[in-house]
Image (cartoon, rainbow, N blue to C red; front, side, top):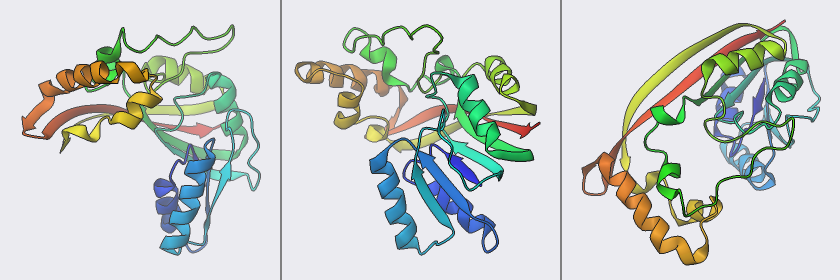
Length: 225
């Protein structure tokens, strides 16, 4: 099986363990650093039926296919040509091969997201180039649009299951200074951004230093035609 957007590899390693001893899993991710982390984790865990590739699944051919199944854990929301990307994923699957992925529901279903708190501090993203689509964590939040994307890419029998959870976590689990920098907060605006984020997250506080966050995500399943 193929894991798209495998990141640090934990889900890919779990998949490899699930299909052992006769199956194998390959993880593909655009980040070299995360792929190196995934390789180290697999080596430390002693899992030898898993491998990882640095690749852009929007355009790259991973090889070693066709695959029986494709999975992704919050790794498919960042394609700027989603139909092209899912068509490429489809091309990696055997006939009747299965795909399942998790992604967020819409932004308004996930009030923990700090983007609204950073409005006016972080410049808005530029509009996508002609022919491109906006990317980001909620890019596939509209389930009807996502179903249309998958069907346009060649998938059939598209099913969607929504999930809503309340999780109790340390209040700083959602964001830290490194993420604020990654999101584009200028260095001289860090105190302002930190205060704005803390004020936003205070609404979820359930005890000192602890918060209950409502998480709304969805799982899509589909079959290759």
